[in-house]
Length: 201
Length: 178
Image 1 (tube, rainbow over the protein chains, first blue to last red):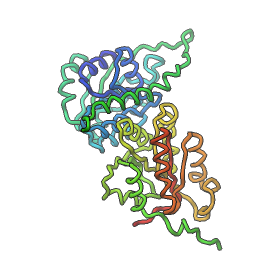
Image 2 (cartoon, rainbow over the protein chains, first blue to last red):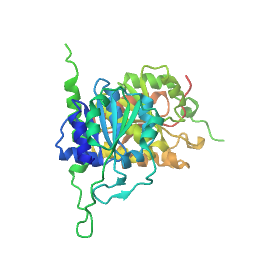
Image 3 (cartoon, rainbow over the protein chains, first blue to last red):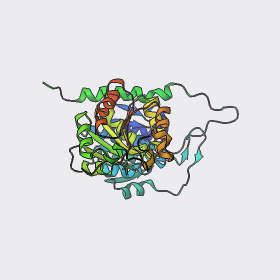
Image 4 (cartoon, rainbow over the protein chains, first blue to last red):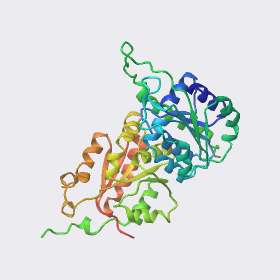
């Protein structure tokens, strides 16, 4: 399964759920041209689950999907406990597990290849945890997964994109948009959430 | 012998601080617990404010930001060391994304001799560097030393609400257990 296949499957099943994505998943959503309700956690590795938790707690009637990365989650691993301790029934945590950092750029190794995020999430107290490495099985199960009571954890094992940076293809300057988009998307999401509130007499 | 400082001998009651927070529109609390505010943590257990406990201050800032995106008005209750621990989340949310956070920060470790003097001349590094750190990140701050300072809470909440800028309330003395 590729990251684009995994993210496409989630997006096709999202309904009107809010999606908070970071790093590789954010890039995949850009390629899929996914719009609001959406929030990109950038540049802030490790922040996606906590941002999404805040939204989920503020709007318990809205489903919130997190598209996290394994390297990102490992930076704030205690966030699994923070999420589970808050028991958000509307919280669906998906983690892209490609086993590398800077996937598609340089594919550097993680601190360990022996960790098991599903077991960690279960140990933290998530309501249910599962793992997929095949897009057909993921697609078949997603409607049920997104109908469960959260917080749920779903590990998506994907093949990392090949690295592109090398001697003749170095890194380029990051655009200003990379630093602005989280705020712009957050303000758009606030407007979207307000539009979902029942009109007062 | 150094004369006792009035603010040191008459700390702010946790119940007064909590009532002022509620009166200023705060509707939830996100925290990594603070030693200086232990009595406030205790008071929160019987308060209507929802409390979200986080494992790190980076998470607390992000949870607070998500709540604000969702229309809530949280306060992030942490201690000075926690402010240093959440610099990256604060940089991303407050500076880059312009999504404000309101902090309630206890000056953990402040020595008795510093009471009545500026925090930035404290001999204790967590105390001494708090104000410069907040200034570096563009976070305006106000002090809560005694009950007459409680009016600073509405000033700080207005700063967040009206200017969309982060703000911090610095608690210099352990809150009273009443």
